[in-house]
Image 1 (tube, helix red, strand yellow):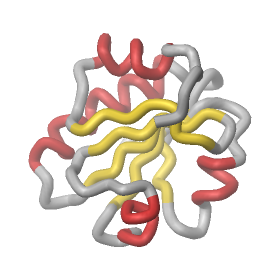
Image 2: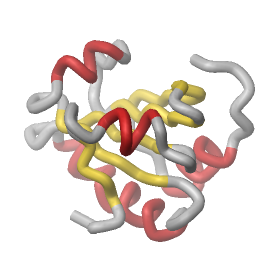
Image 3: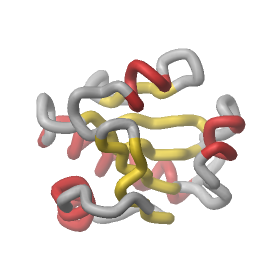
Image 4: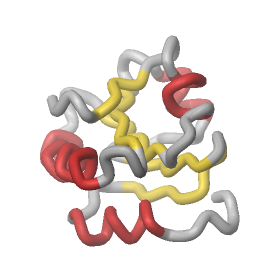
Length: 112
């Protein structure tokens, strides 16, 4: 995995995601999920593209199920975009890089 992608855990969630000074896109995934594995290179490309402007993170739902449950994640991959500690966008399923960029760049107007 790209070292620019944060491995989100229960221990670093508040500091790494909720209190981040930049937007954070969290990919809720699992090892056994083929669509999750297929999306991983796109997330890594976005991490390089947005370095310093936004953070990409992965949260393994098998290891941190309580966080997935807290945000209503029932299908994976699910992408949640956090700005100022709030979910502002969500998408079920992986996205091609161009659509992922639009999701990240969208103005934060209404929480989902």
